[in-house]
Picture 1 (spheres, rainbow, N blue to C red):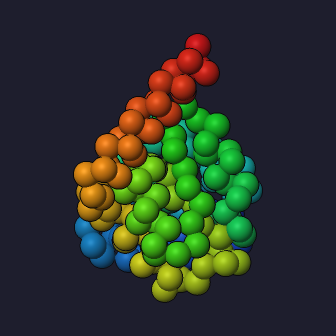
Picture 2: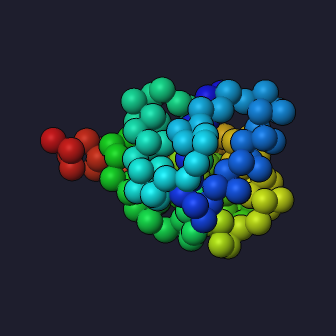
Length: 154
């Protein structure tokens, strides 16, 4: 799996810790700013753009809080970004919402927690583990999101 990553100054150390862990686990990591932090807007655009163009399967971006990144990433057609602050929300972001970009805040999430969150999110699969009733509802919701997106981007 190809994972695009990027970060500003507040998320750079977190990005480096997660990247090191993912490389050890055999993920192909595409670091959009390997040498130094960039402004959060540039990190968000670089990673979301790669996911949008299908140059990466998923993306992980970090800034101070993750809020600005998630807003910018979600402006890209076909990108579904979630700001998460726990392992539970990271996993649910994929299982329920089928996100393809994970956003985190370096002021909020430490390196150990960030690594655990990234792994939970990357290992999760959309709809897997949901009971049938919930699965049916969630599946329809995602289909509606895709339909809405098609209308909105015409």
